[in-house]
Image (cartoon, rainbow, N blue to C red; front, side, top):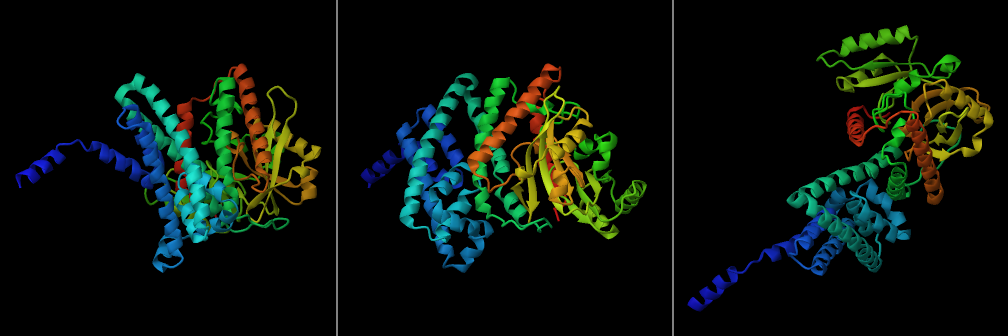
Length: 500
């Protein structure tokens, strides 16, 4: 008995912290792979475990979590309660594409946060063969993990020599910030909700592509981020495009006021802009009817009549058609106190277009960089309809504004022929650089190389315009202000009533 007790005490006297670290690295990928890689970097840098063992543990956890999600999808085919919990429209949208592009989807799930559950559950749900899934998971994980672990180890080792223990809280905060930005960039729910919006009247029906066909655009955004950093290094400023339109308040890349741009159109070209007013919901309590009466007086003073289009002054979402006073009252009821919005006269033209314009400072005229038409809630390329007459009409509007060099015009037009002649169209919205990059107005049916080429060219023009304006004495917005503008717009998007 004493020998057994001595052996047990001897066993407990050993340091088993390595065992906890081993299982942490093995199990953490089930919750968050990036956190597992950061913990692995900590273990390697502090020489707690060999790098090979660390990589093996994380790799095993990544592959095991993949198979668990695959099993959830496969089990949902037979268990109704599991199907209700795990399978939704996003999972179903993955099904057909997975059969043709399995390796691409698995690679996407490794890079894009929030897609892992949907993608791998869809693999089991779509009956992707287990050998194919196994090969894809093993191969993609073997390529992704060493690269990310190497970057994490090298970066953290370098930073630890300067920041000491603070390196790891700092890296954790950076990881959370990057994860938040990646979720905003690769927001699948927002894309799927856009596909579910009611169809609008247009010239011809364009088949709505499945949501999965737009997912590769997430990887495109990642590549565009790298090109943006390259341009920033060349021009020595990460936020140089913020002075592309220097006379407008430099509030950053996202918090641009649409009403400020619309109000800036002067002279005879003002007639091209659909009439509108701006209003702000009162911050006091129980002011719904007072706000309603005040806004009705503003509408009467501006000679605006129903139907109207209500939309946020900042951000892209929240446009609602209001046909009468009760609809306006309901819209006000759903607005939060202090929120500014636009009430614009509804333009009955049946066509809708998004047009990107650019003009170098000092140049006598600008040019159209892209033109897209909207049909069935989907944007498609209409570059072939750009004509010198249309370009001259848009250029006249832009030159009637204060130092407007880059941005997007949203138009309603009567017919394609009229638009090509530069006639019978109304400007319903103008945005600056926030509407000039990769955005939901692009045509997902374009080949990715062609789309990438166009968007990189747009980035190049934004930096070139900003560089010329900087030489004229304008200073770009700081990175902190840009980040604040991004956070403000995210808050606005969540607050405004949903589009209808």
